[in-house]
Structures are given as structure tokens and as C-alpha cells.
Length: 325
Image 1: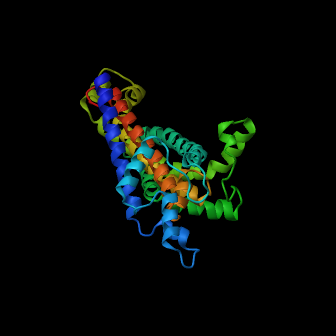
Image 2: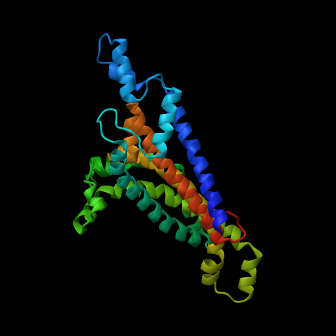
Image 3: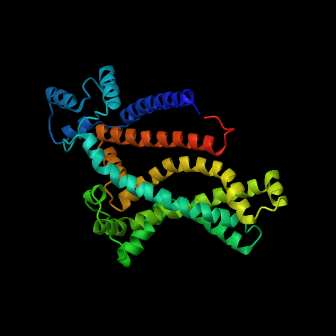
């Protein structure tokens, strides 16, 4: 891995980010309706001058597909100057800074925990082939992995929070708990985020288990595993030092996909549990046709996902030197 490879990867990511920016511009502007109409809704007979004034204020003068507005949009996106929230007047970057820590904490915790649970169970299951325990684990994991996030979220919300009152109905706490954590704030964060994290972990851990088990079964049939057994290597050594390392390649690919999958699930989970993260911000902004907030939030999410995919490529190359980045 040299400077040429890294430079090439950076160029690929930049091109992909440019593509994402253009897609965001087009998608939000082909949506029916316009923020201008929402702002003019309270006026009985809006004049043309009032309409032009609002269009200028919202950066939509000349129509949603104006070339001038598009060039301004490109400049602002790549300088992280996303504009202001149409309704609150707050800077979009400020809104994102207030919401991003919640999503990263929820998303990161769920990813780490699901990986820590799913991978060892997948390795364990691969060494229990043909036994009843394997059938039971695979059946349960397949069932859990096939159920959408929002189904578990609604079930947990209704029964654990609504009926039994084990968890709070709304997972709302100050951002200072995350930025400046203390022992007391960490306890409160665990209390408020336990239920949404469990919802995300259930589905993702089951998926990791199935992927790891399938990869391990494939690797355990390779010739080098037979050679290792012939040399007297213990089953524990074969499991962790030979099979698991090679099986991690397809699993690490799934980890990259998990970033996008978990992020989409986090959007739904955040809305259900009233977590003021990127998902809730994006949901509210989309309903209100708040272009700056919607575009800024999706742009940041896209960058996170693209960087995650790039990191996985380098992990692949580290796990197997035969793979080129």
C-alpha cells in the first residue's frame, strides 16, 4: 500500500461525493411542491413581489432548477456552508452539530455491540455443524434478521416503555451528557438509549452471525485447514488463527454495508424514540421541504458512509495482501 494507492482512493471518493451532491440537488427539486408555496400559504392573495422576495430569501429565485442557484449550491456544499434553516433561522451546520453526536453514539454503540456478539456466535455455530444447537441458532438468527428495525422498535416502545414503563417513552437528554460525560450522565445515557440500541443490535447481530458462520464453514473446507489439522494444530488454534482471519473478509464487507443499513434503521428508530439525531432532523426537514437542512444532513451522512467503505477496502488489503485496493 503506497501513496499512489491512497491518492487514487481519495480521488475516487471525491468523484463519488460530487456525484452524491448533484443527486441530492436533483432529488429534492423534483419533489412535488415548493418551500415558497408553504411560506405563501398564510397569505390570501400573495403578490408577485412577495413571491420573489421569499424566493430570494430561500435561495430559489429563478426556479428550483436555476443554473445560478445550482452553482451557488455547489460552492456552498463543498465549503460546508449549508445555509440556514428555513423555519428557525439557525445555521444548518449548527443544527447538524447538535444532532450528529446523538446519531454517532447510537449508531456506533449498536455497530460495536452487534459485531462483538455476532462474530463470536458465528464462529461458535460453525463448529457445531449438524447439532441441534446450530439449527436453533440459525433459525432464530434468520428470523430476527428478516424482521425490519421499525417492527422491533414499535414492539419495544409499546410494551417495554408504554405498558411496563421499564424504559422512558422519549429518549431525550442534553447534548452536554455526550460532549462532557460524567459518571451520572453516562448512567442516564445508558437508560435513555438502552432500548433503541437493543433494537438495532438484535437485527445486526443476527446478520453478523449468519455471515460469519457461512464464511467459517466455507473456510473450514479449504486445504490449508486440513494441513493445519494434520500438523497437530489444536481446534482452538484453527478456529481463531487460521479460519477466523480468512473468514473476516466477507464479514468486513458486510460491516461496510452495515453503515448504510444501520444509518437507515437509525433514522426510523430515532423518530420512534424521539431521539434528536440526524434521523429526526432529516425526517422533519423532508416533511417541511426544508432544502438546506435536508441536503446538509444527507451530505454529511453520505460522507460518513463513503469514508466507511474506503476504510473497509484498506482493511481487506490488510487481511489479505492478494487483494488490491
